[in-house]
Every structure is written in structure tokens, then in C-alpha cells.
Image (cartoon, rainbow over all chains, first blue to last red; front, side):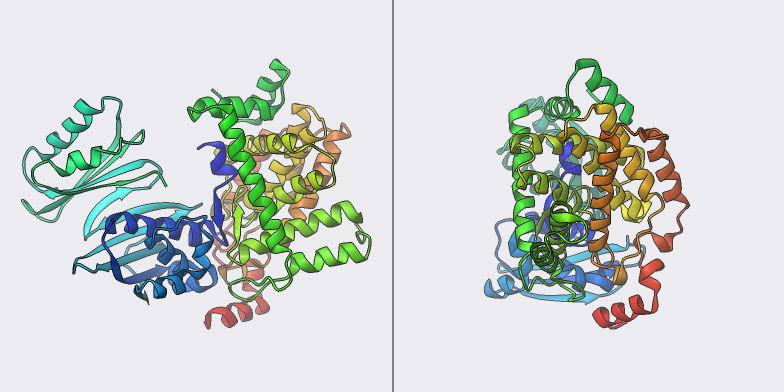
Amino acid sequence: MNIFDIIGPVMIGPSSSHTAGAVRLGRVANKLIDDRKLVRVEITLSGSFAQTYKGHGTDRALLAGIMGYHSYSPEIRDALEIAAARGISYTFLKQNIKGAHPNTALIRYFTEDGAEGTMQGASVGGGNILVNRIDGMDVHFTGDNNTIIVMHHDKPGVIAAVTQVMHWQYADLNISSFFLSRESKGGNSIMTIEVDSLPPEDLMQKIREIEHVTNAILVRRL
Amino acid sequence: MLKYESVSELVEAAEKRGIRISDLALEDQAEAMETTPLELYEKMEIDLHVMWEAAKTGAEEGQRSMSGLTGGEGFRMTEYVRKKNGGLCGPFLGKAMAKALAVAGCNASMGRIVAAPTAGSCGILPGCILTLLQEGAVPEKDAVMAMFTAGAFGMVIANRSSIAGAQGGCQAECGSAAAMAAAALVELMGGTPAQCADACAIAIANQMGLVCDPVAGLVEIPCIKRNVSGLMIAFSSADLALAGIEAKIPADECLDAMREVGDALPASLKETAGGGLAATPTGRKLQKQVFGS
């Protein structure tokens, strides 16, 4: 915690959990979508999100985050209209996700190149979030730290290769948390690596070049 | 490096060096965040400017919340204070109340605010500091610094007790904001670090047990008006401390008590819209009006 966690954040109201946190959840999806053109999103709202989303602008906040806006962007208010103008179609479904935190959203996105993906996370209070699942696989990160998400095939040596690049090329980069999840043996896997400092710009590219890695994304400290 | 686990730590460290708590916090946070004091000061200056904008936006005629339940409070109060020479509380406090309403209203209508410490309690600190600034009572530099004092107290409150309504009730949100603002006001008026702590303690003591019972679960009723009561407690607590009236229970013990009281509150009174004003017949009716169930 630092002093700007108390005097701050600068945010669009009305609620740190139902508005600012929702934008941050959307922003994680935005990082996953990356440079691809988004054409459609289906957002499932669970628990308190489902009950109160209209009064808190949670729908606008999630959509704004998905489009890359920040929790302090005045565009959040007009996010539905902005999405329509950008040719992004959206639907909001109210459905309880079993066992999920009360403020949970599941975002399913479709891009112009025919790809799709999902991200599920919860707004856990004070604008803080917890991302639980990406593309159906368990992840575990808060956005409080810079987080590297590495999607790869479950093969021996991939973790070693990734951490080796991190260590040998950027000795100052310290891992604070590491979490691995996989669909099946030999199948798609995800590493969630939280680091203390901001990784250099070219690290993601270097990780993407590693054999069996399909993608690497940096989710900057939100 | 400071731990921000007790108010007494802040007071002792500042008094030992003969500096303000804001100077201490600025220096410490610059070190902790690996940056320069100037950079942090400028960041806080931006926060102050966002507060100005929020106070302006929220005082506009026709301001409405997203749900439509509230709106226009900042405008009405500003008009009243202007026409009635401040009303019962006088021009200074009248303007401060109008600012707190305006900033809280700006939040409810999806405007840009600075959470201080939360969005629901975001009107209290700007209501206090911006009014002193506007009335020419303090230079802007001191006002920005006072926000570091407010922040330092807020960090202790967050560490030792809570700043979340869902965890500690409204005492943790509007109560904490009032305590932070009270400490900042004392410093702005030339009080000692110990007097800042007294003001913090008095403000906490005066809001002990306040429950979080938002109608329909929205940050509007009663949150917007509680920003005004929090602001009034901040000013009165600061004046008491500046008059040399000591808090009989030290700030740290008040915070421990607030935590215990927060833990003892049932879930229905901690931001779940299950009790208090939210559960009144009118509260339920308004909830139905917004959400249909």
C-alpha cells in the first residue's frame, strides 16, 4: 500500500468495486485481445454484479475496460455508445457462476480474425481485482503487480526456458509469484508470473520466440 | 521507512525532527516508491485539481445519478448558501457542505473523482481542503501537502482498522475520511502533530458504529449526505484539537475500537443493503423502482 491507494485512485464513480474494479477486469481482457480487432463480446454477470450493474454502470465500465479505457477515463459513461460506433456488438447475461465471488464477470470475446477467448475475474473491493480463469484455465493474479501471462504447450523445459530468458537477460527482474495451469497433459497451458518491477519492453517478444510458447502478454500493474 | 501501523509512530517521528506529518510522509513515500518528493508532490497536485473539477461538475444544475435516485444536491446547496448568506452554519461551512455534496454527486453520476479513501466518501476531504483554499485561508502548496497528512493517517487506519464499508461499515468509509480530513485541517491551521492525532481520534470517536446501509446497494442514499455529516465532524474535531482539547482515548485505541465494532456489526449492516435504511419500506420501494425487484 502507498499513499495514492488512500488518496486515490482517480476514478470514474460511483463505486470502486462495481465501477473502477469492473474497468480493470475489462482491461485484462483488452490485454488478451491485444492488437486484434474486437467485433463481439458476451459478458456474463454473476452475484451482486448481476443485481446492481445498471445503477453502478458496471456494464459500461466492463465494456470501457475491454476497449482499453482506464478507470479514470470519462468515456466510461458513454461506453455503450462508443462500442456501437466502433462496430462492437455486446450482450450482457445475468447468470450465477457457481462458487464464484459475488462480483464476478465472465467475458467472452470474438475478434475479426475468427478467434475467441474468455476471461473470468472478480472485483474484490476497493477497485482491486482477482483474475480466476483465462480460456477456461485457472490463473491467479490481482493486477497489483506486473504480471506476465505465458500461453504455451505443456512440454518439458518450457518453464525453464522462460525463466532463463528472464534471469539471464534481465537479472534485476524478480519473480514474486508463479502459478501454472494446464488443460490436459501435453495440451494448452498457462503460466502466471508476477514480478516486482516493470519488465523491459522487449521481454514479451523474447518469450514469444521460445519454442512451444504460443503467446506472452504483460498485464501492467493496474 | 515508516510502517503506518500506528498514529503514535507518525506523531513521534514528526515531533522528533520538528517537521510536519506531511513532510515526513512525503519523504518516506518518495523513498518507498523509489521516486523523488517533487514527483510525488506533483502527482498529489493533480489529485487536487481533479477534486476541483469534481466539485465544479457536481454543482451544475441538472446533475443526476445513474439510477435517477439522487441528483442536484450540490447545485441546491450552492444556491441556498449564496442566497441566504450561508444559512444557519454560515458562509464558510455552507460552502464546504455544498462542495462535499457536489463531489459526492459527481461520483454518483459517473463523473471523475479522487477516492479519499473510497468513492463513497470522496466528498469529505475536498469539501474541507478546497473550501479553505478557495477562501484564501491557505496557500495551494500547503493544501497539497495536507493531503499527504490525510493520506498518512488513512494508511494507518487501513492497516489498523478498515476503510471498506463491506468490512467495517460506514464508520470505516465516512468515518475514516473525516478523521483523515480532521488531521489535515489541523496541520493546515498550524496545529502540532499531536493535535492532528487528537483531531483524528475525536472524529473516529464521533462516528463510531456508523453502519453501511445503502439503499438498493448504490453509493447514493445515504452516502451523499453522509459526506456532509463527515465533513462537519472533520471541522468540529479539528477545531476542538486546535483549541487544545485533547482526545481522552488515543487515536490508535480509537482505531482498534473501530475495528472491533466493525467486526461486531452483522453482515446486514455492511454494504449488503440488507438492513438499516436500505431495509426500510421506502428503501425497499426505491430499490424496486431502480431494479424492478
